[in-house]
Length: 369
Image (tube, rainbow, N blue to C red; front, side, top):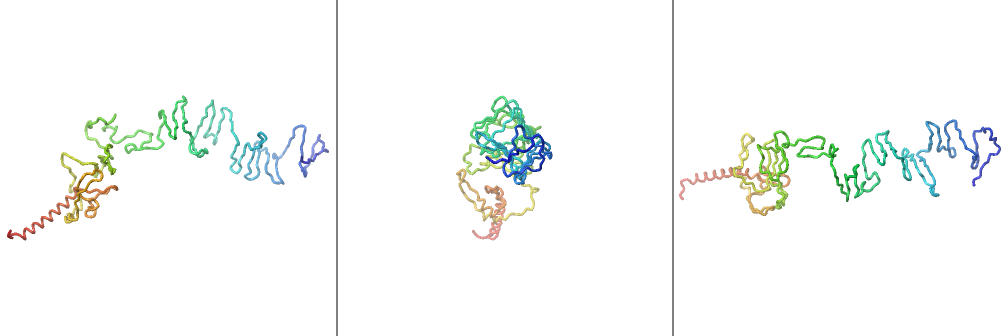
């Protein structure tokens, strides 16, 4: 037991006037009734060797103040003979509260954030979050990889399953009766759509254009007039397993406002009439006569197609590129040759050949057979 200084010579019926009571050991205040500390300066100061570490103050309410920089306030107690910290206020983090166990609130309790811009309210066995935006982040909650475990359900107020989770997959039921926009906009027919308003697809469901319902499984023809498709029409034969090279579909047409439209075909094109290309002088400038002698540098070849195995003939694009590069088209995947334009070189080559024939005939005129 510590040694106490017992003041036995005080008149307990009156007042003791002094500025300091000093003892080399513990001072014991033992009263049969209450002990009252009356500080007219509003502060009860706690110090250790003249260093103030805390005060109890009557200033705008009762204050318990820690006076040491970054020193935490600890509320400690004893549970089953073991002393523990029930509440720690971290003064190095603006007073963050750290509880060692549960926080229990009464029915109809409210947690209020930032003067009410968000609240969590309990009422009749229901918890409501209102105001602002609510987000759930598994990492912030201290979880490793998920916030709703597999097999869990999200129910509506009638206990009907709206969303269920199994093996990491979310299954959604019901409808989006109250939805107004998509979280991420998508393109439909080249038109951006997020659900905020109706969209108007070119050529579909607009005045004077084709209105379509059902499917085209049995369609054989358009009902009337010419129909315009702006953009790209791509018709692919999904049953064609011979398309080993990954070419564009069976038929692909790229439209546009200019005359330079493109048509791609994945197989032979057969027509009952002529194939005609615009060649009007009004469409051309910087016109020059071709050098027919370049035909002598061209090589005609036979070959087997890698994708179909069929035998064919023609030229090699890479070889033609060295002789007449304007005849070669490179789409980034394969090189092609404008076979019809080779005719210009053949015409000039035949004219050169005919000129030589005429010159030889002139030399040989009158020669005996």
